[in-house]
Image 1 (tube, helix red, strand yellow):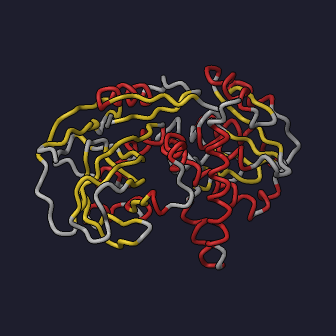
Image 2: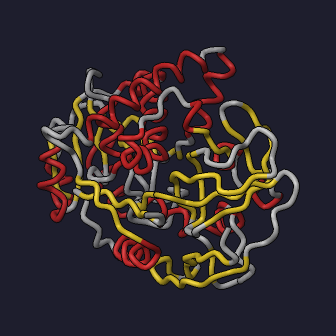
Image 3: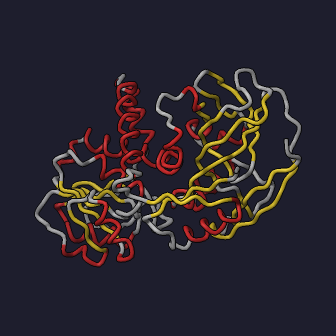
Length: 366
């Protein structure tokens, strides 16, 4: 086992500024497990983790011992390279939530045939789902050839899927068309994929740079630029599925549709640091922030959670296969090697320069 572990830290005041350093590896205590990170994805979702690191607690999950820099969380695959926890074998492969670091030592609890959780006290800053490590060998939905797609989309598709489930459960609040902002984002077109058989017209809003990509997906009934909002058809009950979170765009959408706008579902914030949607001058319904956990809690209370997950895992696998379909892939997955390469990807994501047609995966092990 290495005596030090390298990590890529992020300047809290500017998520695009990073710093690589090395810290000593501590002796393994009883019940602890060392995970060597192999591959992880980087998307705008990770920049969101950094932007809300203090407000939501993401900076607390992987403490650095520094006030100015934090460890931006990522989702990916790792291998167990050291274990003093019963039931967790060296060599096991896991999927979960990690810092951008060569290794992570966790205090294993709730060990089962399916995985384990990290009991470190600082992990309590986020919901339990972020602290669970799934053993790939016990995951009936795991496919080694889809690891890259899973690393990129698994953290995002659950939001897409539960948002659509929530809207269906409320009969789309009476809407007959759904306007989706930030249509090039992975969560947006994941939602579009889920809506393909619903009787609602799906309209994607995107910037000029990503318009050709969004049109090429074929996931939306129509695609408009942000400068064309006022051209959208009115007189139709409309729902706004907001992935951009941009206050100015929101005002224009609300003003344009007026009484036709039945609901504003605020799912993400790819273009803004305002998650509240609080705007006293906004015309029409107040934005309501969507939490995936709320949908899951609803199924739990109704006793339908198992049936929901059965559908979800089957549909998630189909989505993974669709986005990397060799005949007509939705994105090109590009592998980057090492923390130095990860730093450049982070900078491009923070600056909005990342190519929507590419999915970034970083490999740390040969």
